[in-house]
Image (cartoon, rainbow, N blue to C red):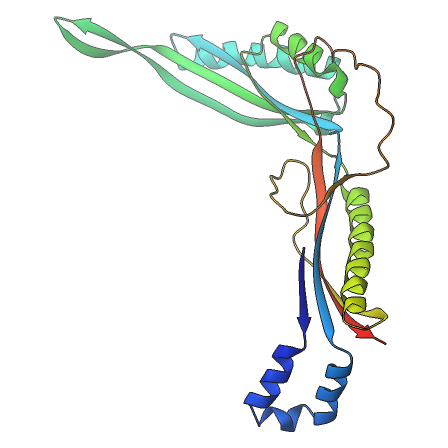
Length: 256
């Protein structure tokens, strides 16, 4: 949070540049001296558990020829996609990320010298999936590995719709800005403030890493301590909480 009272700089600018007096009348400077401006920069952050997670899962096929490797991997990929759909994931939450074919080389020692030998080919396929059933995430991973997934990357947690959280963060930031600007006004002999302008900086959400000195609050008043939470589907997934927030630059005029 940053506070600046914009009176001394304006008065100094008027004294240092006579030409400015032709643009800004003396009466305007007098008005500014009578009702100075205060700028408040507020960042407000709300924290809540994620409601969606994404995983990248892959299959691999090896064979002496490229054609055979691709064919072997095709069978594994079809089996994996069938398991994904059987788990209830929507088609729009299933996306192929990449198909790759590469030579498989082995290194051998022949007559004391290392040599590279072509052993065959490796075909891989990776699929990005998204689920909103975070409590069953561990079970989903088990089903996919049983269906032939050889690689699993993730999970990456996110909030599907951060707009309501940002809206609440804006309202809280506006309330804090008015409260703190009024405090500065009263400390300088004024009674109230009037909002003149609002500038919103970069909003942040979910997977963004944010370092800020602003206050971090819960979306609602903290509830009583909850009972122990049962393990999530085996206990290997801990989604934690994610931050969503806004940064506002607010300009006020102090008034008597």
